[in-house]
Image (cartoon, rainbow, N blue to C red; front, top):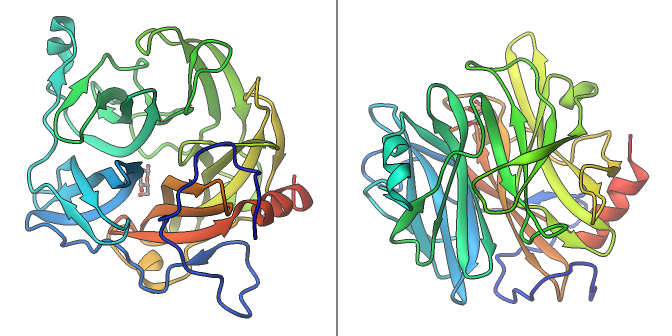
Length: 330
Ligand code: BMA
């Protein structure tokens, strides 16, 4: 199928498998999941909520690796095909972008990275431990040397997700103000910045509703620009009698004013159902952090953390997903 719904580059080598015959849902899993096992590097307890981007005709990324002391860290990685990954055995050590950043560079923990290419930089945002969780910001050109900028916000905040271009002349980011613990609430907000350091003009985007997205929601991969608006894949949390359940949904946001939600799925598009999503360090978690997209075919490949233990890959097609969002909107 040929489409020009995605406003972005072609990615002919996107990891891909066709939808299995008879599969009724709008997303389908890679048959060889998990794509990244928990023990890909010697020191890791688990490798999950991780971010992947196209890089020099191949792929690169920043990976959440909790080590065997159960410290939450980020490691860089590279791949020829987006499926077989080589991860650095050593965690990322950021270099302060300015002398002032030296004061905050010794963070307590780092997790749930997103990577967003803007101009010639690959920006990294993550949940950064600085007197509680907030949004760390850094960048790299080569996935070898990483530079750290100021934290975007005061604590407490999580799920900082940049847009892949300036909007109204400003850098733009979604985030989810939270608390210092496991946060039994949470809406998605929009903020803008002239310089990637000072963030303001905060706008509310989406609240929790019911069912799979009743407790809290948070942006997932970098939004994908389409002719129908920004395509946002996000996670939603339901509180069951056995704890949190993390599923994925999708929304379309206005292109020029992305705090305006055009459509948003009432049902989830993927929920934890396989063994590797339901069993692990934290059961019943499907947590998307990255998406690759091919403008020529409309193919989308989503990387997601499964049960806070391994990394899975799932696929969808942009026209099919947009049709699903519109016909199943709240
Ligand atoms: C959230 C974050 C995620 C994690 C999820 C489920 O609060 O900590 O990293 O995947 O909980 O445990």
